[in-house]
Length: 95
Image (cartoon, rainbow, N blue to C red; front, side, top):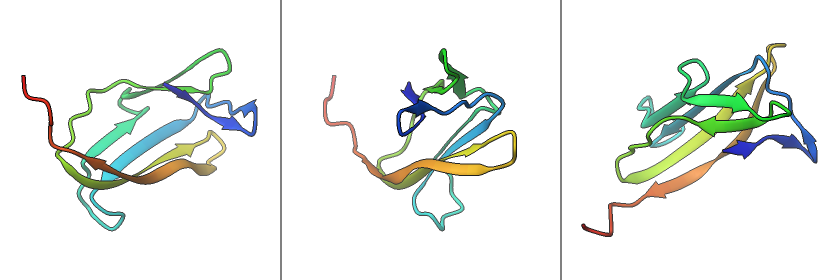
């Protein structure tokens, strides 16, 4: 779970649609993981309606990826609040 703030002010996400996509590259058509409020894999909550909870088992093949999170507000405005790169490693520990 995490919260969206503008400086220290909670951003009200009521009625917003949130989409997170993970891809091998920004230009890739392949989506390794997708989470959305549309399929309830992302939930909006909290007293200020600014908390986001991921509600899906994440199972991504080892590799390098890029990701971002777009919020589409009821007004139609779209903002990208987080983005970046990450690496998923093969399991190290073996039971």
